[in-house]
Amino acid sequence: MLAEMNGLDLTRQGAQRLRVAVAPEALPTLLNLLEGRAGYLHLSAISCVDWPDRDQFELVYHLWSYETRVLVSAHVFIHRTPGRFVSVYDIHIPAGFFERDIHEMFGVVFEGSPDSRPFILTEWTGPPPMLKAFATEDYVNDFFEWNDYHPQWLEDIEKKGGGLI
Amino acid sequence: MYFGPNHPGIEGNYAIRVRLKGDEVLKAEADGGYLHRGFEKLMEERLWIQNVALVPRICVPDPVPMEETYARAVEMLGGLKVPERAQWIRVMVLEMSRIAAHLFMVGGHAATLGLYTNMFWGVALRELLLDRFEELTGGRIYHMYITPGGVRRDLPDGFLGRLAAVLDEIERRLPDYDDLFFDNAVVVRRTRGIGTLTQAEALAWGVTGPNLRATGLAFDLRHEDPYLVYDRLAFDIPTEREGDALARARVRRAEIRQSIRILRQVIGHLPGITGPVRCPLPNPLAWNLPAGDVYARTESSKGELGFYVVSNGGPKPWRVHVRGPSAMHAVQVLERLCVGARLEDVAQIMFSLDACPPEVDR
Image 1: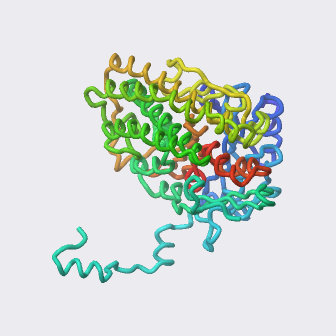
Image 2: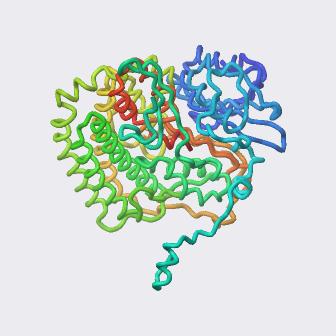
Image 3: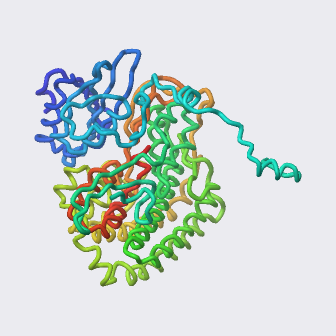
């Protein structure tokens, strides 16, 4: 069936795994085809990978068919700047959550996605934290002041010969 | 009104913003982000082997599938072959964890209805399993027992006999749960028709696991996309048709019995399977996995658990994406099922979905 579509690179990775590399503009068509012709009703996940050296994001759509019992992983590469892609919420409702999550964590904008409001990071003002450029330790050192923790009650205990081990 | 994050009826640190008219919910919005964890980012900073200590913490009630799925993803990337004995032991701890999680969850569900006895019983029975986990792994909740290539150590002497006694005790107590909860007329009236999902809705909304099976679809990854030695074990896939809170609880009740059945088969087989419990690993402190990506999936007690793991050929994961079943159940599904419900049923809808906030806030 997938041979009918141009621009697909198929790799079988076991009896129940199929990897598909697909051009970004062909992804919605692929999802529609898989859903309508082979029962790929279940969007298991959308994963995003940051590849700053290539200036690309890789989006991976994991789809499962209750009919053929094969897991298809469709890989799409998009430009990192501006990082925009089309939503597939109209094909798979679960995409709404994954697109919101990827928008929040990587900054990718999914046009047509139903809800792009912050979910986990409602009080966050920094850059999208799952980007490779975001260094957790540096952020903590810049954002917080380190203090030696030595309260009065601990001093009192130490005077009596006790203290933290 | 904020339902949570500090509320006895909410699971974990989580909130639901509900708009009410009287006690009827007009709109519900899930609100995560209270856990402050960032596992996926942390995993990119740690060696492949170090993440073994991190992954079980993603889900407190059912940590073993996290360990197993991560380890399997690493094994797929590295081309490691898990010895047969270790595969049977992994099935054993997975099913022990499933029973513990279901006991915990059904007890929690009962508590949302004001029936605390069931919760205390569930926690007490779970303790028996936690004792066995402690004996086997040294940890009661976070075992860090499943490592890439196998498991950390073999079973202590006499372990299987003690596990069999625990299973007998759980089985002996299950009728008490029927009397108190599943056949209780008040519970049936409070749970029937609450948070109802049709099978079509469940499939469209990405529902998996017991919640999907409660709508009549006999689908289980252990059967349909088998891993470890599940294809050599006999067990049924319990289903219900109604798709409501009661049906979801009944599926879990039936799954406890199926897990006991699986564990008894493991107890029967395991003594006859000898050999190592893990394959040789390279120096874990200087271990580069080949570049590539894999998606490993497990049927956890809550549904489909997936780990998408990417290696760039280095000593640490380049990317780990954890797809917990609650990514669906605790957000879009919960929001939809709460609409039209009474405020007093919001907590039981969440518990009946077995939503685990750390799987969302990861």
